[in-house]
Image (cartoon, rainbow, N blue to C red; front, top):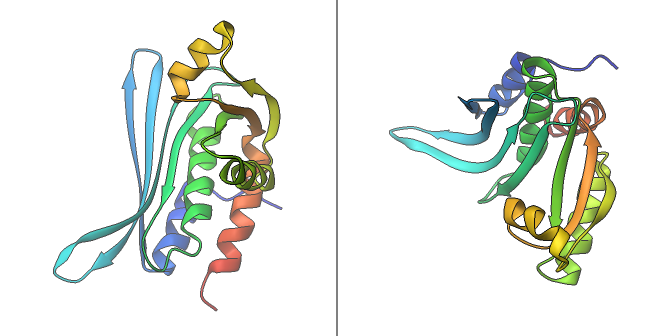
Length: 170
């Protein structure tokens, strides 16, 4: 399978009547990223359906993903668009090949769902982040305890793109 480009992902979003936008800011060696998906509404501001925040360091393992949120009615495929755009951007605009994130542990049931969700995108467990003193820097970065996971951006893009294509109108 040929991996899609960011413009192709934006076109897929537009075909579903959605706006896909990336907000990228550079601060020294850190590039911050926010990916947004919204639905256009006549005569009104677009309705935010989902977003993802993260940052990239100029390293092969430099993509760090923080907050991903999908909300509101009719959001099928929104998460897949966000993931596909995030991974495509990383591969096209940065040296990042792999991403890290924390499957937060708010409660056990939600944590298990998050881990399964991230595994479907190709993420694998690295280690638990808990209450140990050595975990404090990671807890400060991600805002809590959980399972630190790493995934390959190309694998994540391929899997997310398959979901985008499955959600497109016939």
